[in-house]
Length: 399
Image (cartoon, rainbow, N blue to C red; front, side, top):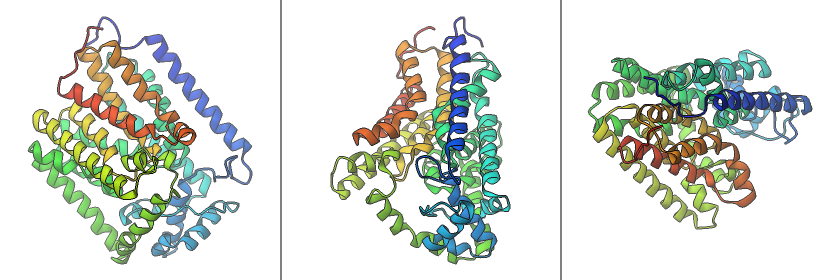
């Protein structure tokens, strides 16, 4: 259904995203052109975190999967990708993801990064554009709106995998809407590659009585884990769990850059509180967002707005959250925009949507300058906004 007046000015919706994409492309060209021996002006390898994926793949293809958790061996492999690199990028992923990225080193590093990023962008756009209402904007405008989302840009810049995570959430959502719970569960099971992203799914499925998709999701995740054991043996899982204390130490000592981590733990730790307090705050936040998710799913079932709440809440559960995971907010924004187009929205709600869309670009620079992790507050704000709309607590105004 088309509304008499669009949610946002059509001309601005057409021009601004295209301008942003052009600026991203110019920035990418400038970064590559100004790099030396594939090291950018910030001293990081081009592709950033992707170097870890390629290195783990190289070691795995060489029959040394366990070596991915050895900092000396992973650095050696990373220097095969970018010889001038001197900084070690540690591998912390479970064997399922190591299995999935194994083919990456079959291609030279630069080409592999390009293919990986292109596949992520393609899946991200192909799935999420289906969430927009037909009356919101043209198909081309929606594509540019998705490409211009700063969360997506940050993800591609880091060579990270959050575009795939967003596509998994939306792919499963769409399959569930089409009455295919087993295929939806098959899709959701792939979130086991980053287990913290699937923590709220069982809760949501149980309280809403979505038993078929719940069991299918569990079976899919278990099958992927079993397949990884078949490929690598159980020792790789032992190494993955044994690596957890190192991840904790690296995070607690700020070796993982806190300005890029919009979690409750970092929000409070950045203020100088004891680590025990920061962890307690993270637990409280995780329990609170789980309760909100359960409430919405119990009342509404698996509606699109319920999914917006779950996805927003997911990013608040773990202390180990990075700015490149703002890309996972793209489905939330799409669902909110469609809901506002259909039910109407006040000027305040429209402004809120723009803030959520734009703010990820400044989260890390702002935190670096002020030692205040505004990204955590942005995630809390997003969850509150989605919850209000999901429960009908907002008062939409005619457009």
